[in-house]
Image 1 (tube, rainbow, N blue to C red):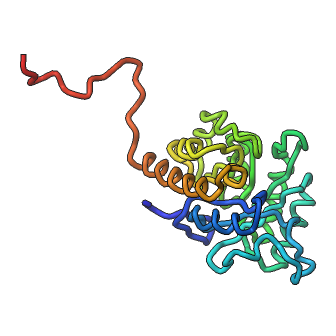
Image 2 (cartoon, one colour; image 1 turned 90 degrees about the vertical axis):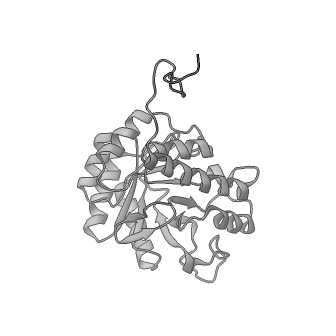
Image 3 (cartoon, rainbow, N blue to C red; image 1 turned 120 degrees about the vertical axis):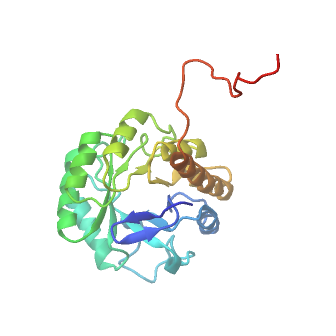
Length: 257
């Protein structure tokens, strides 16, 4: 696939980022991860038994030296909580990247814009490579970039909803103005959603439920891999503009009467 995905000092060939939660078994998780071709795996710090390295955990079947880990601050409802969780991840030596999640509402799981911006600023100052999960607000995306975010991760729709992209216009605004990678995160339901986001110009896709909740997670992981690649190539190739009326594919000139 043309070009690589660059996030801070890191560089990746795959533009599909995969979450590691909700899989029926560690074996299915392992096979789905391999089928996806993902190089970045994200997970909630609060799900890891980091206080007891000998305890079993959901990452134990993966060949971790082949992946870049992206811990997230899921479960945080304030900037202070997010910063504390991020520091815990860094102290554990997992990775210098952190996905900031500060949830503003337990029902919709939509991000708290004020808390997200504050946590991003503080963690950037502490030397983290910060990827904030945010809403599809173009102005907030701009402020997060100004705060030093290494990538912007707007949600396509509410987490785990499978609704796909509900506001393509705002997403396009964010992409057009972005000076850092835009990785669409949350709400992706099927490969067509991922392909559309990539065709709009997104730099990557992060998902979990769409794969882990599928009837065949391994096959779905492969489908998303191909969808992301197709969408990216479609964006680079440049699609034809939409027209109101038909346009003949064959020229009228030179036709036999």
